[in-house]
Amino acid sequence: SAVLIILMYSFAPWIYRLFTTDSAVIVHGVHMSRFLLPSYFIYVIIGILSGALRGTGKVLVPMLLTCGGVCSLRILWLFTAGQIYPGINTIMLSYPVSWSITAVLFIVYYFMKFPGKKKEN
Image (cartoon, rainbow, N blue to C red; front, side, top):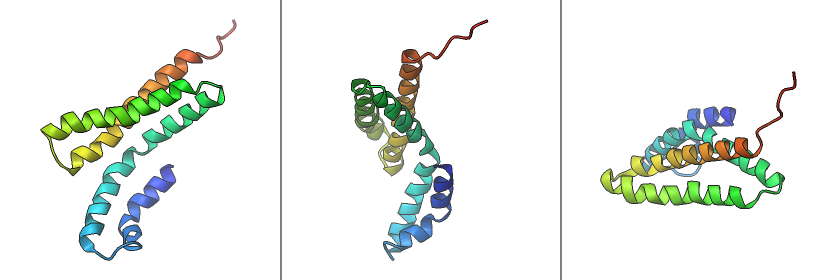
């Protein structure tokens, strides 16, 4: 994901030019991409831990954490921070904020559920 993030960050203007010639759309699209791409690795944590938990047969908790963290937190963010600081940057910030909180919840749950083997002396 790091390689793709770096490539997409670097070539964002040219990627947008594949889809539009409108310079305003390109400027806004590049701004949004470069705002969100650095934090996209956080979502990888959610995907990996969610998949690992589902692979062990634990499907309810990953679903609840994903829906609650990624969806509900984002809606809560938009109704609170979005009202205080209206604007596209506040809306975009809802993604890394909700991903970060959800990733922490997944990490905590994963290590509580699977603490690992204890070392034998």
